[in-house]
Amino acid sequence: MPKSETLDFLKEHNQHRIIQHYQRLSPDKQDLFRRNLEGLDLPLVFKLHREFSGKETPAHLPRDIQPAPIITVPATPSELSFQEKACAQGEALLRENRVAVLVVAGGQGSRLGFNGAEGAFLVSPVKKKSLFQLFSETVLALNHRYRTAIPLLVMTSMENDRAVKDFFQAHNFFGLDSGAVLFFTQEMLPTITADGSLILKDETHLFAHPDGHGGSLKALHKSGLLSELIRGGFSELFYFQVDNPLVKIADPVFLGYHRMAESEFSLKVLRRRNAAEKIGLYALINGKPGVIEYSDLVPGSECLSEGEGARFWAGSIAIHILALSFVERLNRQGFILPYHRAVKITEAPGPGGRVEKATVWKFETFVFDGLLLADRTCCVETLRAEEFAPVKNRQGEDSAGTAAQAISARARQWLVEAGSSVAFDVPVEISPRYALDKEELAVKLKGKLMAIKEGAYLE
Ligand code: UTP
Image (cartoon, rainbow, N blue to C red; front, side):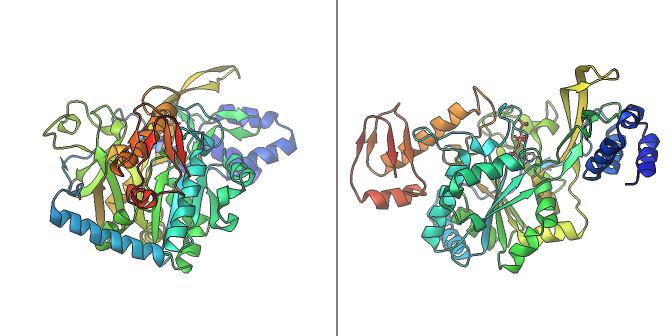
């Protein structure tokens, strides 16, 4: 934007503090400041600020919420045979090289307090492998098993892009072909105070934040990777979050259910631990399957009832499969995921330049809102012990400690089911390259019974 337009635009939106700051800068720095503004969608943020101003409750709270259909964990012979069919269909998709995987790693990880690449967090109980190493080794093992070449897409933010790329490079892409690890960066949006002021981060930058995990669907398109994948014959995108070391990447059963339902957007759910668990609720929203963010649930609503017989038990764990044609359609229509507002307290320079506490608004899109826009969807139940142990906090619930325990507990369970005995409190880890699941483990052990009494690593 030329200088005069920038100033007019800022004036129009009452950004007097920013204008004063700008006018004090040298011409070179003014240029830099303007260039930095160019990457930020200021009109969007002012529009969102207007929309959300004065609203105490979230923007689009659904009126009618009912339980939604779910393929539950199979219990009967016919459900088991349906699952087998699904597995065969999913394996076919993998062998046909139709599946790409995407890990979203652009979040700020503020609860974890880990600056830089959250995927570099060392999480496995015995070998202390990083999240990125676990994911990369899983993709390697899948490539080997299905004689395929799955691209691993990694979404970064402008804040951590360098750190993520350096981490992969420093570890030789954990054995993956470097050309098959595809990085792309999500957009940032300016953070704004509740009263509508932009905030300075430093002399030439505004405070900004990544635009939410929903931004992955936009950035995938803008980066050109979406059309590249489609041209390359890929049709499905397996989506997951960087903070879940138990994710079963490109699970063939899930892929198969998705394919049989001709779904455009599929998700995995599990039984919520309790009403306070910070995961989205899966339900029919005004008659359509969707996910309601936990913070949007109204206290006292039936959705928050707990225990046996609770009708609303399904929590979304951010494991999805999206048809690439759907992602393309979403972008063709103009990117139409709704924005949500997060209210945060942060430190920011105040009117006199002194750093003080400020209430700020961050606008983000959520990937699961895509569900409501899909023509066909599919939801599959999974078990927490098999697939979900997020690393969200430094300590306590959902922390690196609980994730390491969960990796160990799952390995132990697989070993026990294969006939081995494992002392209760010892750490155990199975490399994805040794076995991707309990069935593969049983085959590898070939009836060999192990008695594990101290920390063990199977490679
Ligand atoms: P979270 O909702 O846990 O957010 O992200 P966060 O920013 O990582 O962590 P906090 O809230 O600051 O503590 C869930 C997943 O979505 C990704 C994260 O990297 C994580 O895998 N994410 C989130 C993005 O990729 N981009 C975003 O803008 C937000």
